[in-house]
Structure formats: C-alpha cells, structure tokens
Image 1 (cartoon, rainbow, N blue to C red):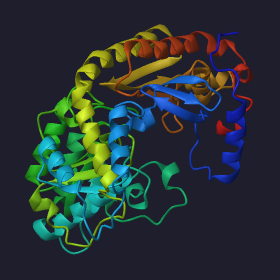
Image 2: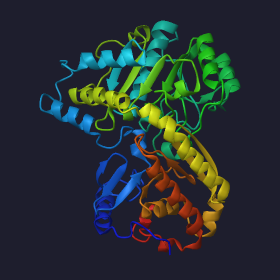
Image 3: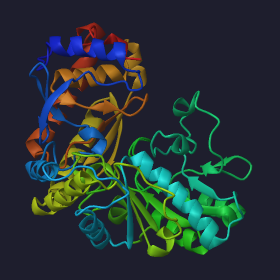
Image 4: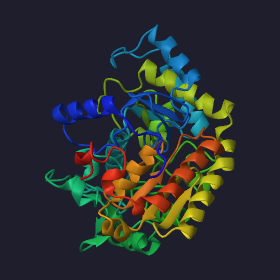
Length: 448
C-alpha cells in the first residue's frame, strides 16, 4: 500500500454528513473540512495539513490570512464596517483613486462577487450601446466566447454553453452569449469567427466579454495575436472589449498584473476583476472603465448594500500593497515555470496524464478517463488520492481534468510536494482498488 499522510478524519466525516443533510448540494466539495489556513497550508478539523493547490479559485493569491491584510481589516472593524450606501465613508475616495491610478482607468464601480461584476458589465455595455452607439431600444447584444465561465447568476448563465449549468434554470436573458447568425458558435481564439460575427451583427453588438485566459474550460491561453485582433475588431465595429480578469488577474498568469498584459500589448475598454484583489479576506469585485463609458450609468440604477464598504476598501488597499511589498510578481516569474515544467515532465513519463496547459502559476492536466474507468475509477479518485497525500486540489467541472492553482506565495519546496504526490498517484493509483484510497468509502456520495 502507498504511504499516505491523511488516513483518519473522524470529525470531517461527521461534519460532512451534517452539511450534506442541511445544505443544498450545489457544490461537490473535496471533503477537506478546513479549520484554519496560513500561507499555502490548510489545516482541517482533524489536524491534518494540506498544501493548497486550489487557492479558493485564485482568491487568496497573497496566501491565506496574510497578516498585513488581516491587520488592516481588524483595524477597520474597530472604526466602522458598514455605513448605508445613502452616505459614503472615509476609505472610499482613497480606494477609488488608488485603483484608477494603479490600473490605468478613469472610473471604478465596486460590487461584491465576480458574477455580480459581470452582471454589471452586461448592464454597462447595454447602457453604453444605447446612449453612445445608438443601438435601437432593447436590441443591444453582448457577445461571449463558447465554454466561458463568468459566474452562476442568471444573466451570466444566459451566456454559458455548459448545459449542466443551464438545466432547469430557463428561460434565459436574450442577446447574451456566444451565438450569432443562424446559430453559429463563437469560439475562444477564433478571430475569423469574431470578424464574421461583427460583420453580421456589429451594429447591434454593444460588447464582447471574454476571459483573457479561459479558466474553467481548462486553462486555455490566447493564441499569439488573438487579443490584438480582438482590440482591432472592437475598434473597427465600435464594440466594447470587456476583459474578465476575475480568476486570472493579480499576477496569476505571470509577472504582469493582468492576464491580457502577459499575452499582449493592448488594453480593454472595460476591466472586470475580483477574488484576489482583496487577498481573499473579504468579497470585493470591481469594474473599471473610462469616464465616457461609465457615465452612461445614471444615479440610483445600480449598487448593493455591501459594495465598496470600509472593510472592502481596507482589505483591497492592504492587499495591493502586499503584492508589491512582498515581490509576488517576481516570485511568480520564478516558481511558475518550475511547476509547469514539473507537470509536463510527469505528462511525458506517465500515461495517466495526457496533456498539460498553463501559464504563470496555474495549470490544468488532463487525465486518461479510459484508464481510470477500466479500474472502476474517475477523476474524483485521483483527487482523493492527492487528498490522502496532503494535497488540496479540485477537478474542473465533471471532466477528467485537474487544476493546480496554488497561492502565489507557495515555495518551490511546496510545489515539489504537489508534484511528488501526483507522481505517486501516476505510479500507484491504478494498482489499487478504489475503496483502498483513504476516504473513498466514507465520502462515496461526493463522487457523483
């Protein structure tokens, strides 16, 4: 039998059973019941430690509970946490000025979660389309790329091609998504399709919302010249280019802040970001653009109670300082290639891994589903094997594909632990019975 680090989790078993009884099953979690975390290490309720290769979907880029951000948030809680949006507060002006000057935009709107920010970007694009472009009332279209993941709210899901995400939630919002013409599908990296789409429907297209790197689809990067062509075509047809940097921003894709900066020299009209902007300590999302575009939103037509709160502002300003003070961009440039090279070496060596894609400090590796199925296993069993080795990771949707997305403060030594655990999996998993993997029998109901 392989040597496993995590073999007993009695409290986790009990808590997960209670969770499954009382909470809706809208997630299929890896059964790691987190008690605490610091940097790149998570500790569960049973005292087991895991190297985090999920990073709250790229939210905790500065590492879990970074002391500088924790300190800033605690200090703000002692003053004021939440005034009404009918007023303003002492941190908001500094927050707006800091983000606009640092990111190179004129206006910033604050909300809470990433999907909420995309929802606003749809509204902003439509408003600009009617007010500035002159699109006929109720005709504005917002294009997206196939296999996108912009969140799970109804407006965002309207633009999804993931049928699992759409099942039982219709009818959907019209004129949002990747379909154009007589039902043609606009694919990521398809410049010919994008030009055809704009030629056919450009007069009614307000915006093209696209992930700079497609994350949930499997870490697909833009082909050389793609983003430059997006910029060129959007200029030609008077369409807003809206860059979704919710998961891939803040140095996730390389030493430059935004994914699009690591792959091009062009700039979007609208930038959406969230998650790691506050270091993962408080839900913050923002939409940035020019004054001309943002001023098409009239007073009292968008907002939410917690948006731009003093805590959100304190966490964000502190997190932005942490990324610079602790030289996180330089660290990503050093350790990112180390992780990607290690994964590619395993792909070349073992048949279980059939492909690796990535950039910066994020990667996805494909698994041979047939090999797993022949042994009565799925991708979930790989996740559980890694869990037993002390690695916290997740698959991408229901596909035989796993993402390695650690906090950006992870060390080479910790990355090597993740690579070694994966190599052990490649060597040992298919020689085992599924039920011999620690936790598989106890958490079998999560495998579906």
